[in-house]
Image (spheres, rainbow, N blue to C red):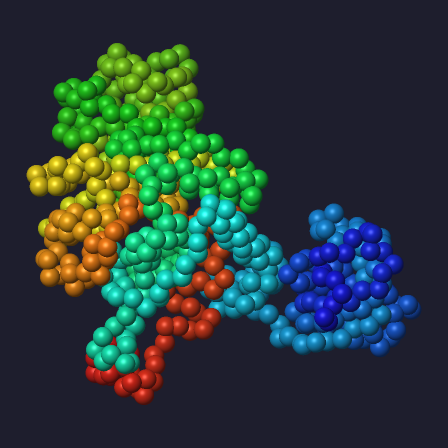
Length: 586
């Protein structure tokens, strides 16, 4: 080894030892008589010292010629540091250098490689290999590593076996767009990169591998945002001979294990909430339950009072922002502007303050008596100092808008603390959702999700009312995992494909291999997949999964560091039987 120790391990008990360190020059401070260098590696920072009259003139000259990010080897004796630094673990010592070697010089980096950098996102993405040297980014990847290690430890102890499934598979019409890969040996035919290993893990259950998992790359060609990348990682799991309760208990155990081992946080038993209640009380199937502020339906209290907005609305619904009556008129106007944004879509906001004397003052007082307003306050369970915020309109649209307002109020009132964790299961999702554009049903999860047994009789008459044997885990308003009990009977799977608009021929062409497998003793089975990048982001208290991926893509799906995607040569196109005339110009 070119070093005896790392830059993060020397302590007071190492004083007097001769050591060799290697790393990158983070900072050089020259005070004439004394010269200090902060030497950094993945493990930390150690201060190197050079002293006029003690250090040789040649060594001092050599040290003064160093630049930021030079890779060096330094040898010397560990001594007690005169001016200690309690902000770093090595802050009690320094190394008095007697030999220095430049292993590789460096150009001046385009941004400061420090915790607080002067580099913007685009610049740091272009030089991601330099950004990865910064401590915050390195700590994110160390967290990811610990999450991965503890996931494997837990699942291994639960008798799961890790099996790798193919990356080159068949394109399917359901779900997001596939990334496709042309086949040179099969002209005109294409592989697809997997959006998930769904069918393969079900085939593993047919094969008798009753507990499977994989920490696996998946691919979706869809528009990007903070919590999406074209390639992402899942903790993918499947179990045989189980019920939904077995799945929930097993993977509730995984989350508790990760919080305990990685964060030192104890998570209580996860409550269950039906999809219907989540939509009714939070307007979202991934409610943030770190704070209350549940929806209150006011239809029975506000209709037929002469206020046209409420009288004509399908739904009048509101939230109680506890203690927020002190908001100024300007701040309430800002909330009105917020809900009227095109992406939220409300037409306006009605509010009512509960005064310290218990009286209620609203923005629609002329339509409602004091007794009416007291009834509003009672419905909300409001107390003096509370602020009632009310929206009206079409049911689904209004609930979605109120969900956005609720989250905004939670943010403004400091109720969405990243160091507080509230997890729950959302269960009993609809099996199908109707798409007006395609004029057919789509699977809410995927086509292999089993209906709840008690709803099977609805298949012929009211398929839209069928509930799925499906479940999502939600933490702090983020869906971190989802799964279902699967169909394992060929006849039921064929019925499901028929509901989704597949002809028998289309179903056979796309999924005949799976339905055939069901005829060879397929066991009851179910599973779940966790968004691993999202889990890391949640544990790290960040907002973007890019912070926890070593080499992420930007919002256009480009890797600006290696400049990908990129054109390929005419020779490669010829080998793939793709004609230049088929490609877009430019």
